[in-house]
Image (cartoon, rainbow, N blue to C red; front, side, top):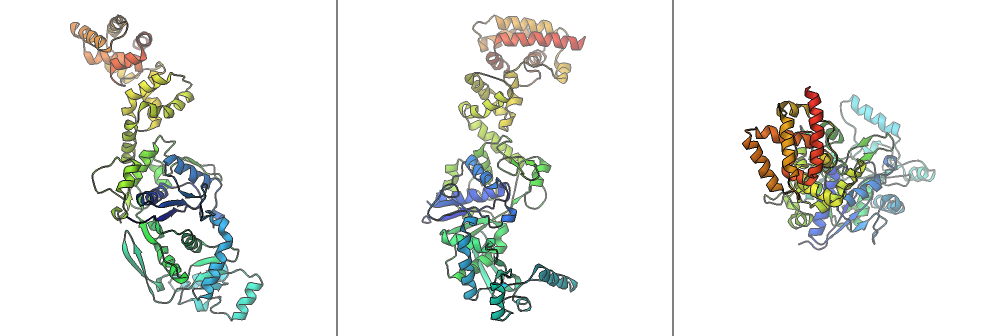
Amino acid sequence: MLMNPRVRFAPSPTGPLHIGGVRTALYNYLFAKKNNGTFLLRIEDTDQTRFVEGAEEYIIEAFQWLGIPFDEGVGIGGEYGPYRQSERKAMYKPYAEQLIRDGWAYYAFDTPEQLDAKRKEAESQKRTFQYDASTRMGMVNSLSLPAEEVAARIASGAPYVVRFKYPADLDIHVHDLIRGEVVINSNLLDDKVLYKSDGMPTYHLANIVDDHTMKITHVIRGEEWLPSAPLHVMLYKAFGWEAPQFAHLPLLLKPDGNGKLSKRDGDRLGFPVFPLQWRDPKSGETSSGYRESGYLPDAVVNMLALLGWNPGNDQELMSMDELVEYFSIDKISKAGAKFSLDKAKWFNHEYILQKSADELYPYFEPILREKGVTADPDYVKAVTDLIKDRLNFLTDFWEQACYFFMAPTEYDPQAIKKRWKENMPEYLRAILNILKGFAPFDKQQAHDAVMAYIQDNGLNMGQVLNSLRLAIVGAARGPELFTMIELIGVDEVVARTERAIEAIGDIHS
């Protein structure tokens, strides 16, 4: 077992949290808990131009709903704070200056216009411009300018950036816990900007400094950060620090075709890609969330855990404690994992089945309230036990259970055509008399008596019983008929059936 690792989830507050990000956080959490480690939340908000109001609060609320707690970080505290990068702004400049002094970085004064001209020049020669060891001496920077001019430019307040200085033709080795040894030559890499004269670091510098000063031991993040890993490894080398261990997670792929799962895929195929509903503060556009779509948080967690990892056995349904017990990085796949709406639906259905009526009641009571229904909690729980095997989502409750709380006002015409035959009112009234004869109502005795009536009169059982169901429900659906009658009550069943006889009689006339 590893000794007390420290891992972090470090999102940018630029909008809602994608479920790919949730899975990244989940894997960090499972790894930390499995190894008696610490899991922290850091908000990386150095790019203030992309900051979105409410995004940080959304991130925190999403993890509270999912049941993935942080040990340390934004909203919690800890000895390595502050945990928002914007609040750590003053600490980054000395590190940038250290890299310059040690020959690992340089000031660059190139204007956007000058850089654009270089790109266009390269395009005209059918090549791509890159700011690197082969071009940097032809640019406007502290490597190509006299020291006096560099000092004068900085003193005058001229805008600049600090760029990393890769050694030429160096093979950089990145050891990845999932992918093994990754090697890239420095000639293929551009001299990334680390720091700007407005006092803000870029992601690369802030990320490395924060991970080091927060004593992060393992960086578990998405595959999209793999191209940045050589720079990060080199920054640790430049500072003389021991690098953390890296693990780059496979992408979450769209259900159909190739490519990363996006919000557009969710909109197109009808499923959420965010944990909670999100309303964009600028456009006003609303995006669906798993919570509002009727998913249980533990079902979402279980489903996400198995997108790119498996426990090495055939078990699919796992509690958080079991996920922690089974989790290991070496069982994470290198290949991308395809999202499946059918599988997500299956997980949610299974988790609904596992819940007791007492556990489900807090989800269903607000649905009833919204529909203007006041019902005894014990009655609601009895209904829940009867219909929960029909629910894929919590939001299915009203559709599957509405007739337990309201009499139907319409009747399925297809069911009428198929089931409601000549003399049906006569048969149903006879059955109502049988039902009224049991006081108190006895489900088994009533069932046997009704079956005897149907058989003794040579009637079609399917037609008669489904017509009674139609009268009670409004359609030929629902759980076992006599259990339903017992729950709704004989008086209410009699009243509904009489109304149906009158209404459907009118339809047939």
